[in-house]
Image (cartoon, rainbow, N blue to C red; front, top):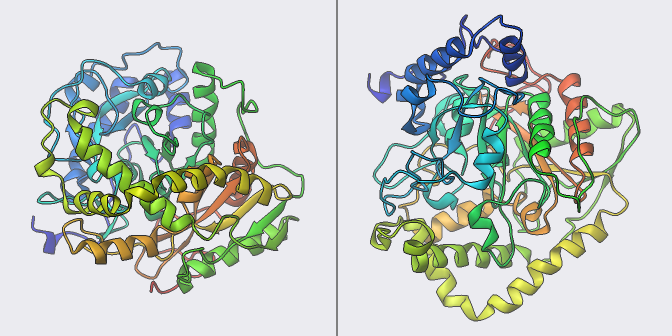
Length: 487
């Protein structure tokens, strides 16, 4: 089937062992013996084969191994639930290529620390999900390879960098998948694909190997899901494996809180680009919903210094420089820096021109955590857009276009999420609207450091007040707010 013949929207939801259940429901059905792990795994593999030619979310299949069942204890809450691990995390026996042709496809000999924490919950890993090269882009597109496509509308991006995971969860292949976030890479694909994406507080989960080496740890691991309770349960189970005593205990959050909260409202980013009308309308509608629940909504300025966008861009460039310079040590002895894509090359050049500014940049980025903590002291959460505008078409963020044009597009698009990475604050993306061309629009809630419970309580309340669209249900039904045109 050619791309021209492909449907605009695709999903794999059907009357099989997975149905339209979330991960919590599937785990419960397995525990009660109503369905078996083998049936669930078989259904997920069949679904993957059905939609993968369209969405291109998988970079390595481990279907034969997965059919043998989970490799962890049957005591894990999510025993038997199928999932995918993003292809920048080692899983023994599977290659880790970081979305790049520069990294050879050699099987890992160990499993990464976070993958251990996640798989201890009992999941069946079906393979590796796609990401853009080294997670640098905000769309899962590659040089000389097919892009991952959004199951809501195949002409559009899945977001990034956890775009493959988001596409697979939204399309119904699995109910939950691994994601990680160094500038929005959990929240952006969740927003594009109509999912729940929580970036945890710095230190909430075990650090992955790459994060430990950074001068400022901006990377957090997590998951993308279709329900708030799956996200809440994932973090509760992860806490049983590792508990950071420096953070408030999270435990299992099971519903909304009745206490009134003070929520700051930010509609435009600090980079000077106004939010597009469709996204703005969705955020304003969400603010009105929260106000109707008894919460106090207070417009506020972006709680960060005006230098932040340039500082984060410079840090972003430093990461690309580090990958090119140290790829053989960091990733694989056979790393070939001549094969990195245009975005990585451009970010590397950007940093080389400005490397002398790095000490002051690091000082200000470190300082951002204190500035943010002071700014939100009187707020329970901050409501913002996830992104500066609605989801772009495939090609808009192609990594091989002119770097200056791509960089300008990225800074307009990814204008809210990086703040939580540098400050270490938790933040969650929730699907609260929909465009006329059938794409989700999400809102973003940020909290105080260690404040995931508050974000999950607000997420439960919003999920109950306005259940979000799902590809498992009719995609033509009316939504609130009404669909608005993408700009």
